[in-house]
Image (tube, rainbow, N blue to C red; front, side):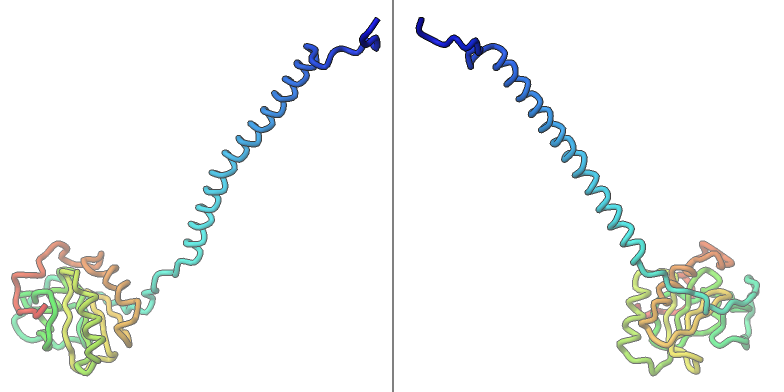
Length: 211
């Protein structure tokens, strides 16, 4: 009789097809597992990278300038006088003062101590500088106070340093307008916790600022 008598099943038998289907299913499941692993891994890498970037920023972020050099005093507020005052500190940081405060702003000439002290009682920071301070540094100081409504900037004869920052009972001398502590001092003491009369005006007083 013609034909095979080996007893092997035909190549297209049902068992072969079932085996191939099972193999394909196993392969597809393996591909699916790999896809899930990639989908999970990508956000994890992104999160880790973001966390690493944040950590790097926090680690590399410079520390805020120290105000340890600020000198402190203990004057009480509210003492008004009509006669000029001889202050212990020069420029003064507190004490008796005239009953009219100085309007906050930029002045191109020296201002009256007793009025400026009253402004500090209202929470102003008074930045004084030597009259011979280079114009570029004076301009930088003007930029520093441009957005501040409770600051006074004025020249001052006989300062112990090129620039002196004063708030009520607090004072810091600096050598240059580039000193980062200037910004830190303003942040700390403009209408700061040291203010004897918080919320009081720094306008409608005396003086005509140029800026």
